[in-house]
Image (cartoon, rainbow, N blue to C red; front, side):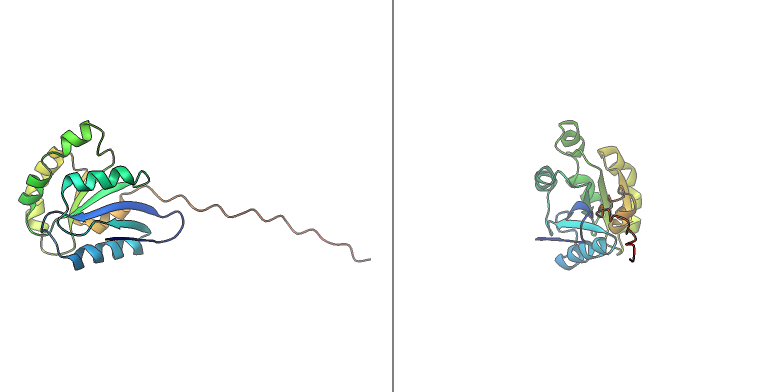
Length: 156
């Protein structure tokens, strides 16, 4: 889909909705909400597979994390992320992976499968994947050029 920019020094994440987990609108809104929290998002849209996300993550070395939206069933997330540990061991996914909803009704199901997702290598299971913005390292502040102190000009 596209990349939403939030300015210089913003953190970057790769976002995608697993399988048919969320609508394109949900995926877009997650990216927008991340942008409001100072995080740029490379939005892969819907129907994302772990393999596709890993390829995009490899292309984006500056990305701080991989975020998966999971709105339908936490069980489908467990199935779709079953190879995460292998990809992490091979170095193909070497940044934190977060799984969460888009603020909808996935909370109960995600709670039930959180332990299994952690066992697969997911760093954090969130009710709302946008909360991952608070778990990411702070963005480096852009360094402003130093302005020399004003010198007093003698009036003569």
